[in-house]
Image 1 (tube, rainbow over the protein chains, first blue to last red):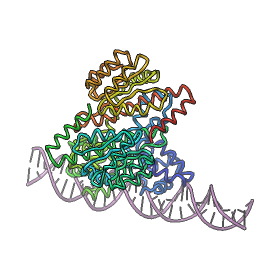
Image 2 (image 1 turned 90 degrees about the vertical axis):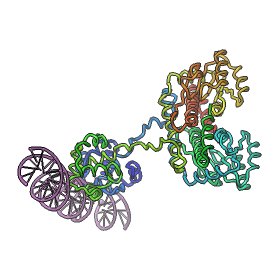
Image 3 (image 1 turned 180 degrees about the vertical axis):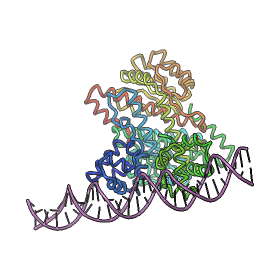
Image 4 (image 1 turned 90 degrees about the horizontal axis):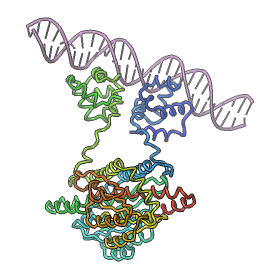
Length: 280
Length: 280
DNA sequence: TGCCTTTTTGAAAAATATTTTCGAACTTAT
DNA sequence: ATAAGTTCGAAAATATTTTTCAAAAAGGCA
């Protein structure tokens, strides 16, 4: 329930002297500490059982045993070195591990932050759309292109363009019975916002994939999906987010495909075959 | 220490009636059980505290609390449903989880299968290349395009084209002091092999990103990187592999960038800034 | 600084939780 | 059907945790 390290962080500012001593011990020897009962822990740390009991409650646990359980459950802290800044001194192997770890982490956090209600709405718009517009500028165009490759093989007609002006023209043809998936990492790119404005004017349901939940674009969206990647991590957050953004597109596609297919069994097999054929 | 499920298996043959009742409850509600103290567990299960205490010792734990801890630590059996076929009956949430899980899994396996020696070689060719050709057809073109977006901002000159014939023309200009990164998921596409043939003829170091380690293309490569995604998993392995292939490209790029940058500090800062600017 | 208030702390008492004892109920073997 | 062994829970015994209370330490203020 309450992760020990999290609880500790919350309470940290008001730690007294004995409590600090105790907290330090718990952090450095979580294994030994979780084995011991309150009396043994008292001897180990030189802190009275009374204080230990009170400490547990202060952290928000109902009793000492609950703290013990939290301690034992608290995930072994992830290999910090894998989350460190890439360094020219790292071996090629370490660098690869760090990069993959960041990507995996981006996917995990993105999934955790995924809004199921928005997803259901978006899928509904997509599957019922007469046409689906896929747009994105710069590196985000990759996400749109990926979606294009995927949706091209389904029964849903798609509109895509690499060039901004072509995207604008394509977007002009969309209406209330269509849908638009627009990707922009910053969510503030003015061309992307122009596309979103167009969608709003024409009452096209607007699905946004972005890295910035508070951006103008996210606020304009009828359904927004946020690709989360650690900002601080050696400044290439934008690069890792791409993977997460593609996974979001992948999710929109797969669910839409599954749901349209389930309606008609023969079509199901056909589209499934085309999914397989999507790549060579 | 002693995993609960393992201990239970050992003791299973000599479980009495009440103990079976208890064991069943612990297995089906490990969460509720581990929250409760011995008295609460007694009420939940209809087994006396005496029997519960004896049960704990019978399984080899020194006391009831130790059993509780083991219970809470016992790795929750991996949610098999998350690796199952996507089903139209799944909730949107479950579908999303399955898709992300597959993607994460693809990254993990790909990392585990990564050949560090090949990576070092490839990075060396890339950083010393006069020109870097980035090619790929169909959906694999996305990987090439992603690489193009990335390498474009470094000091390494890049050649990319969306169209196959343009790719052929660009490849004709590469020589022994250049490098080519060619992506093909199947590794058997004839156009991709034609590009590889060209590279061989002109002695261009050939770096291949593929999903098929035994393919013709992989065998032709001077350094091959394999994106692994579970074949069996609802037939869309090719889609999940894309993420892994992009991560491989990402890795080639990041390591190359780091290594060229570390040589000249001022350039380092500049290229790092451009990495940030890669996305908008 | 010195006085007062508040906070922290541990010893011991009180409250809780767990284990063991003990005898009854149930099984199994003869 | 009876004896021997086993299982089991109530209650006693023990162990553990929490709370109380008073002393010590820290903080605030004239």
